[in-house]
Image 1: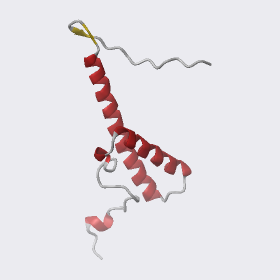
Image 2: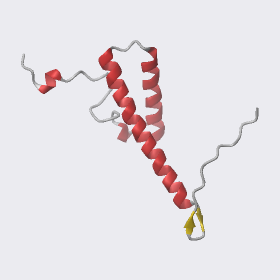
Image 3: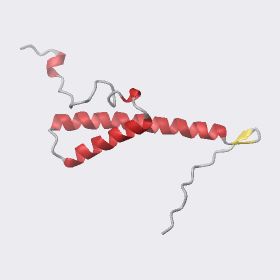
Image 4: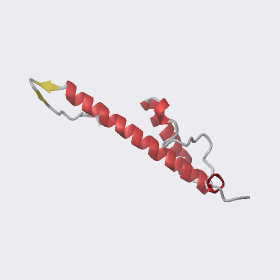
Length: 100
């Protein structure tokens, strides 16, 4: 048994790919968010072996970054679409207030 890089590399969690965040590029935003919620639920259970937990965490970080980038892009597109004459006006999204 040699100490090749493949032998020293920890095993990936089930369903994880070698791409950061899994194969998140193939997922829609909603699918990526659902996958992230599933990872969080698995990690919160606290019963994953260390290497699987680390791989799941790594995948979650990738999905988080991908979703954040997509939200930033959506915000930029909205700012471009909302214009006041020749000057772009940034209007933050305000969620409707909920009745108590």
